[in-house]
Image 1 (tube, helix red, strand yellow):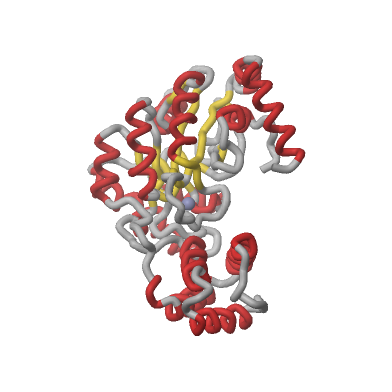
Image 2 (spheres, helix red, strand yellow):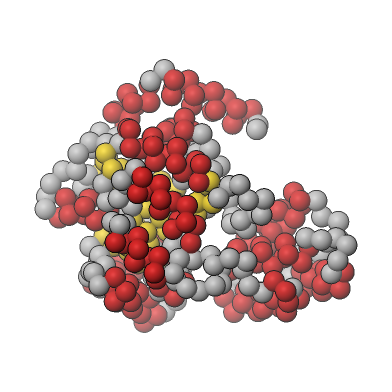
Length: 349
Ligand SMILES: [Zn+2]
């Protein structure tokens, strides 16, 4: 832990223990609605890495402590109920907090759902129907998984590692991949993800296909990464709300408008068919949107849409540009840190 982080930890626990947090909450969140954004809730006891970039996971233990804290300190409401309040011109009660999840990771069903039931928390999950029952991870996790798999055992797969080294060199990542320390491997994976984020989709796919050809044994993720429809229906039957996160989880700013239209409309219909219920909430993949995309979402019959921009919403916030506060282990590993994160007290991340 660096000095700055250590100082923050001390400050967070002082604020927490001196009961200043409820006071700050009262003043900071007066007339504000807080929407929290989660992605994956990992087991935390497994020694297998989860291959997600930072900012995507909390552990089951952290999640349970967080839900217990929310239950004690906030007024929990579903996103759909908040939208209804707004559309009826009513003011949500002070301290309103809403829990949302993006992507529909299987770990949310496995690890978060029982906790949501236990604390009666009305959460909303945004899913991309093409990802449901899809055994393939998002490209970022997939890329990390495949490379880590090839480099995992320094005594095996010498030919695979050589092929990988040649493939990486073609993209400008030259170096010896035979004796990478765990920290160096993590750094290499981060750099590759950053590099491929700005490359065309076709190039990224080509690279991942080449990786799959090298690490033949590891072409599939070890577990189902996303929920299946039975799990979605089971959660819905227990009060979890579902919204659309587009059809294939693509950046709606980099596709043509007809494709964006399909992503927005077809996803809605598919989820409605599965749940036999109107789908009125949308979350922009990667938070990417502009006025044209927001209008498409509105015209498709959604009543609200969420961003990934961090912030609180005032009671009159634009329903098609709802801000959320992303929660993950790096910023909320302890309850005092979590409490401060919700209030946006040390907002650097
Ligand atoms: Zn997403």
